[in-house]
Image 1 (cartoon, rainbow, N blue to C red):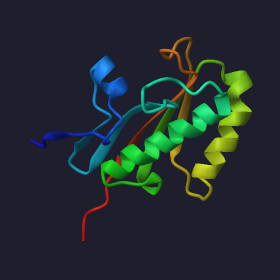
Image 2 (image 1 turned 90 degrees about the vertical axis):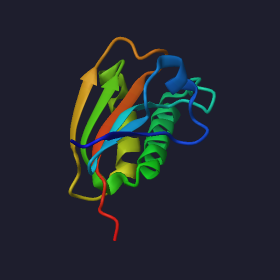
Image 3 (image 1 turned 30 degrees about the horizontal axis):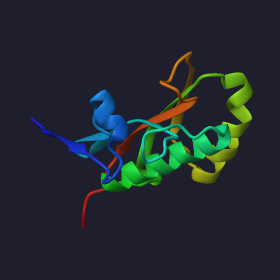
Image 4 (image 1 turned 180 degrees about the vertical axis):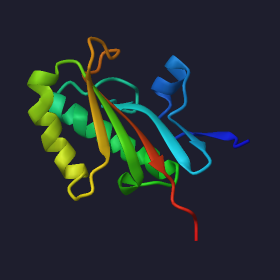
Length: 132
């Protein structure tokens, strides 16, 4: 049986400690990244929406790196939006900076009414490349 290993990014534990979850779990060669939000190091939300989305992606990149993966290793993306209709353009602008080349990962976007003070969240599954 494959053991699960918690992946914790140094210096970014405020939300994880507050809510009792791991930033990511490595199981075999799969990295399951918990929802990343546009939080500052103290866990507070970035008030500007597009900057919040950018910060969520930056936080995602850092957790992926801590787990030995990159954006190119992502196979599944799920995003959560508090107001998808008005937020869509900003999300697409940010998304295009991080996923600029095909093939793009599959993506599911879900409208929600609460994200603990945030307006956007992104969670992914990535396949960690074998070490040479």
